[in-house]
Length: 270
Image 1 (cartoon, rainbow, N blue to C red):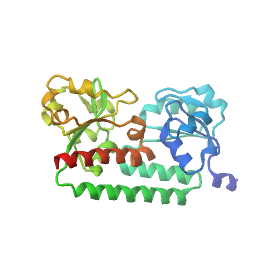
Image 2: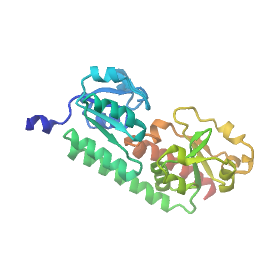
Image 3: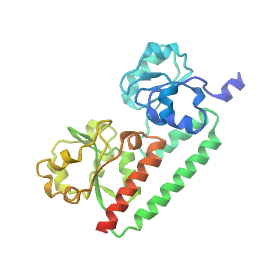
Image 4: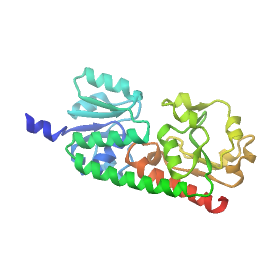
């Protein structure tokens, strides 16, 4: 029995992408028996693993057929899925990481659960070291741009906490820092779009949860013609899979893209 416990779960269903990507990075992808249909990182996972869930729904019968000994999920938004699986006798672990530190903690926990704590820690230390390098470069900029990160356009939803923090690490200041503290998207809705205009961001980054970002649509919003970001053409997209996944992607590709955007802005506005 102790040997079975030491090996950790052998048949894992991942309801969101971050656990899937992390297990692949750890070389533990053989443990995965089901993934989210929204998974794009790594791309090979879509070809190799059955897709058993969206974000707010799941194919419970299909998950049960896979006989998982653990299901990984994320946040209160998957609480109903988790509850139904628990009632069916399935072991479920729901993570609720909303900050950079919480992402690191979640990734370490997953690594430890599959017996890869040491390897996981080495990888996380490398990620943290790179974040510190980026942060130092950001601090050295002569001027920090003000950034508006738009998670959704209708209604406007501003950056969740980890995105706001990564923008800060990348060298920019979130124009809605008070909203970043709110974990729920509904609490980060900006009801009056004129407030974004008043805060006058230098950079706008859109990541519309899987919908293609339309910079021309942003530039055409009433009153936005005098916003610094619009006047200077500083309207960018970062794919949701790279920045809104609270896992390896955000800590690597997501922050790197933010940093490149900030550095490019600094070359012409510093």
